[in-house]
Image (cartoon, rainbow, N blue to C red; front, side, top):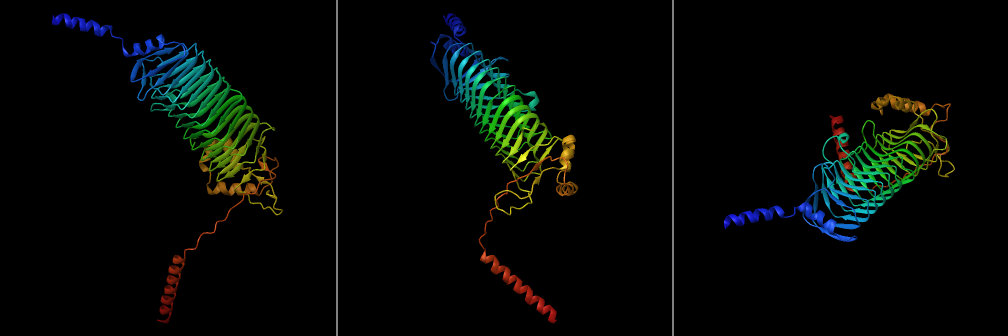
Length: 419
């Protein structure tokens, strides 16, 4: 009898559905538009092909089995995935050939790619926390990888320790806002994506905060780009970009704040360039591009460019030595950001190691006293930097003690003279 019970129990255990098949079975059996509450941990490669909401309870985790994605959403619409954690060797979540997809408050750690989207319309990714594995970024994938899709809203995500925080290629209509990306190669990387808007993001401790390449129509505003110190690092780099607006950003403590290469019709306005090694570097820029109404403080070099030059207008410079006699808010003499050393550094980046050396400072001073035939890097009407003087409260105790010390020193000196 015991033997029969053992055999029956054995076959019953084999017939029990696994954890993975249970969740997939729920997905397969659910009516379109249903909500599935996910509890506990599940291992497998789950697929959604119908309108559905997947809602995780506290502690709900989906582990990918093998190298396939933990969750795939394909050939469907109206899918919501919320409050789930994922682990995967390669990709945590893949979305392809779908519409109206919302991914919110998910977590992915130690995967190669966090969320990957292909050929999908109307996507919102909000509140994701994505952290890549340890190691060099060249061996990692991207936090969010977005391809050939339309109408995307990417906001309030935190991404760190990946190759590119957001890799964006061939997207029509994308709004990237209120994200934080750190310790990666590029914070955000735009490729062949026209008319994108990126605002209110924080990029820090990457190689380059924002990389924009081969784009016609782009706007970056109210972003923070700071602490990009690598040899080839920069806060923001534009390459082969046309018709872009760069406004009201803060570029702080970067090797180069803003790099522009082979660009046309770029407006750089209202930004704060603070404590960068070089604030702006420009090569092969057209005459329609302009840098105006920006503030430059604490930068070693304000700007450097190739011989075609860069148009500077009505910016504020902390090293401007002119005066404003008529008090109209503008200097009475022009500001020259030209630096022969800066020009050399464009061609020989290794020269940056001599920045702030006594010889370079002397050379820069001589530049300011020399009229340059080519009117490169000259702001004809610089704004005057308003300086606020604060009157410090007097420390009377310190004054009294100091006076007593001076009095005693005087007495001792008199005694020594008499003796």
